[in-house]
Image (cartoon, rainbow, N blue to C red; front, side, top):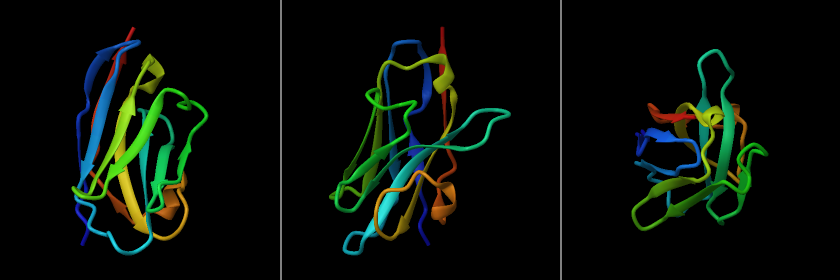
Length: 123
């Protein structure tokens, strides 16, 4: 069973940066995709960024040019570098992963989820 653990959340002023990490992904030789999602209070979960085992990426329009997803296959760690943060980026951030092809921003495509890490951006 996959056990994903996020870290790196915190509080930052608008315009600042944070880097999130997600450890625990175990699939290396098969095709897979991983993603970052977020959910703010009272709002639906939103796919933020995704990457697959071939390195292809996909981003939500709201974060393009500001966020960058990457992975380290040696340490089996997923990253999300968040720059130029805005108050509307405030949310609980979750990493997720599953076997398959192509990056996906749809939550229903994932069966393995972490517990989340809080990101708070103040103005």
